[in-house]
Image 1 (cartoon, rainbow, N blue to C red):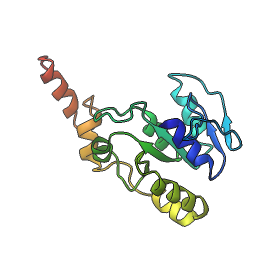
Image 2 (image 1 turned 45 degrees about the vertical axis):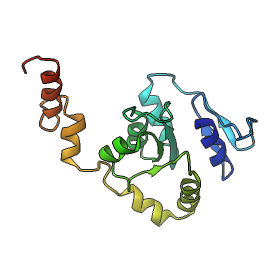
Image 3 (image 1 turned 135 degrees about the vertical axis):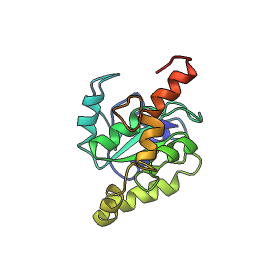
Length: 172
């Protein structure tokens, strides 16, 4: 599904691929005219990826799992940190609880045309692109930080840290 997504976007312009997925047509064939393979730092080279992503307006960041309700990795965060507009596929309930749906483009594998059309439109409309880029990234601000990122008392209110410790039966 990630190969097919890259291939679909390559129909609209050049797509630079940095991972194993570098485009595959629906019929299983490969197209190379607008797909460019670029080496990156490798697994765990998050800073290298952020620096690379910073060169692009859009980043296609899709989870490895097609349909897993609780699988969100660093991919979408790297795109946000780099300043490009994430085109994301992953668990809808979780991702929309963490991130503001107005701050990124959700790529629906079952109905990709909406995302394809939006990216095509935003590529030529700087005002609309900037409007999305100016949206708050988190769905619920400080409440999101507390719920998902407060592994320490120095981040948010430390509530996630306490919740994990209670789960593990360790006193904080």
